Length: 120
Length: 173
Image 1: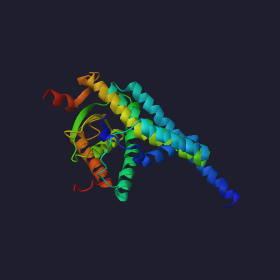
Image 2: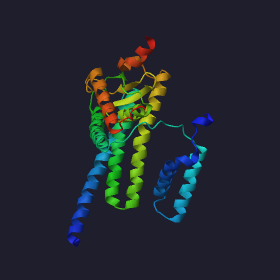
Image 3: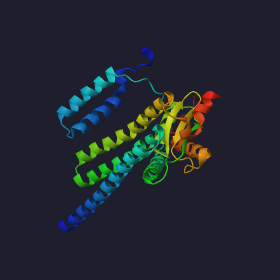
Image 4: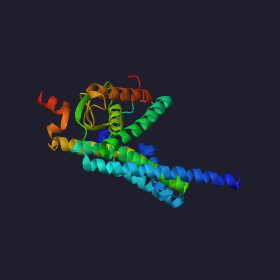
C-alpha cells in the first residue's frame, strides 16, 4: 500500500470515528433526557437499556476506529459484551423490585396483566 | 446448595480459560506473568464462587445464530432511536403497559436467553419471569407503537422462535 492510500484510509477511519462518536453522544444524551422526562420507573428503565447501550457501543466503536490498536479494541469489545449482558438484568431487577414494592402506580399502565393475574 | 448440585472445580476448565482470557484482556498485554496470575485468579473464582449446574440440552446452529444476532442488531438500532424519539419529542409521554406472554418452550436456558434479548429489543423491559408457568411479563413503553398487546405477543414469540432456531434443543432421550 502506498503512503497516499494509507492517508486516505486514515481519513476514512477518522470520519467514521467522528460520526460514531456524534451519534453515540446523541443517543446517550437522549437516554439521559428519557430518564428525566419519562413519568415513572418502568418507562425510565427503557431509556436505561436501549439508547444507552447502543450509544455506548457507538462511542466505543468510534474510539476503536480512532485508536486502532488490537489490545484496546479487545478491551472495548469486552466492555460491550458486559454491557449487553448486565444492563437488561439490572433493568429487570429494578423493574421487578419496583413492581413488588408498589412503586408502580396502576394509572401509569394501559394494560396490566401481572396485577390482573394476581388479583384473578 | 447441596453437594450433589455443586460441580467439581476441575471439570469447569472452560470457565477457567474464559476467565483467564478476560484477565489477560483487562491487563492489555500477554506475558507469562499475566497469563499465570489470570489462571490463578480464574481457579480461585471457580473454586470459591461455584455456580449451580445448568442443563445443556441444546446445540448451536451457526446460521440460526447469524439470523438471531443480525436481527438483534437491527432491532437494537430501531428500538434505540424509537426510545430516543419518544424521550425527545414534545408533548406528554407515551402510554405503556405490562403484558404477559406465554412462551412455548419449557427449557430454562431458552427462557432466560429470550427474556434477556427481549429486555434490549423490541421496545420492552422484562418485569417478571415465571419459569414454572413459562410466562414472561414485559413492560412495553408505547403500546400503540408496538401494535397493541397482540403485536407484543407476536414479536416475543417470533424472538423465541429465532432463539430456538439458533440453539435447537436436543431430542429428549
